[in-house]
Length: 292
Image (tube, rainbow, N blue to C red; front, side):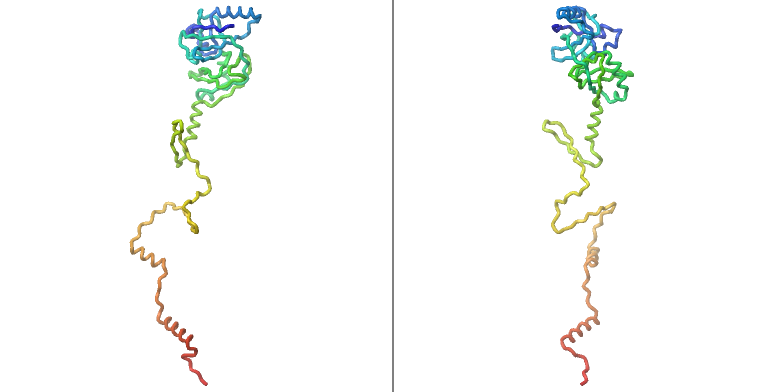
């Protein structure tokens, strides 16, 4: 069947008594589309499928997939949920092209919540409730979820086996990526330096600001690049020891007397003994009486 172009209306204006349809993934088409599609099936000798899936494409190249809610829209118009209209960047009465497609059954889907508080809720119950209003999931779509008077959103990050899948009557494995605020908090924690650690702020080639935290020193000693051969330097920690006061000249002189050995003059008795020993060494027997 050839694609058809319709003007965009809001589904909440067309079905004001059914607010739940405004957060689902289904659209409302005109009756003329149903007639044209049935004629196409008769020509190709096919039966009407249980679920008909569609692809919506804008003039700007944005696209998504959806199911059908009913065929009660005004002639030449299509009614979209508000989130889908925002996703496709469509204003009221803008044109969108619709075509019938076949999508594979979903196996795995990866979501990224808008905030980390969503992960504290019962995700299984919420998804079973809200995904009933969807027939398809497309990578890049952001699905709104409202719980306990608070608005949440889930961005479709990945789907398998394709970029768009059919989730009607199938078991899907769900996975989650960290929320935006959780990822930012983790990055800030990595950038935050430890107490006493210095950081270096610079710029990348592209002009972005970069904060570099030097790696903490390892347990090994740091090299002394000013070391001189044949010298040893002992570094002892000085714990709360006041700096020494400058010494007066008199104290410096007294210190020199203490640290350097004084040259004291010998006593008179020791001088006589030294002279006598020297004389005996020159004249043996001097000072002694010899009897023959």
